Length: 228
Image 1: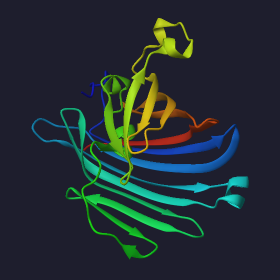
Image 2: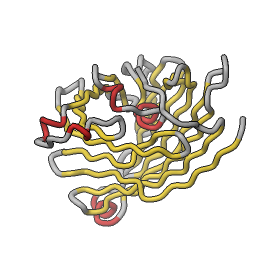
Image 3: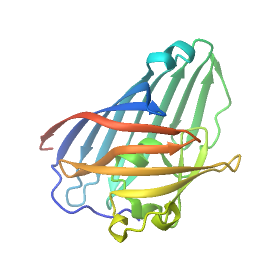
């Protein structure tokens, strides 16, 4: 389902990515992501490790202080991510929630109280979906993904739906998407733009209509490459 990319990707690549988050052009957050990618070699699968953090800033920090740490890891086989672990730790002044997915089990601790382990939602976790070989074509038939607790389905929309009449816009690095919240049925409109860094694609910008425009934009990056 996941398309292979043109061009050469280094055997070992570490991407240091810095994003700026805004709502209606008002800065609300900062997001850091470190992506360590090891290319497949012969019969040996590749590997990925993702880690990062996010925080609220500005006026949003005053009214809705929020912190998050996250990580994910797994293999890369036939150009596709095969997750083995995922974690999302979120905190506000009133609440903390620690969600972990490992060994096909979802573990959750809310405000220090651990809940019974259960099966995680189907599909890829959001970190693997957006930072390990993302491709707009992968969403043509719909793609299941989750945040640990909540299941979603991502499907590509035609550019004609947006009123943009441009055949060249139907590219693998720029797509309109529909995000379905599987549990409550809500749908959100997204635009995902990708950029290639050292042979790997990552999000350059993500715009979500909620109904105001929430944006996540890549503002700085650094690349390390080497051999296995």
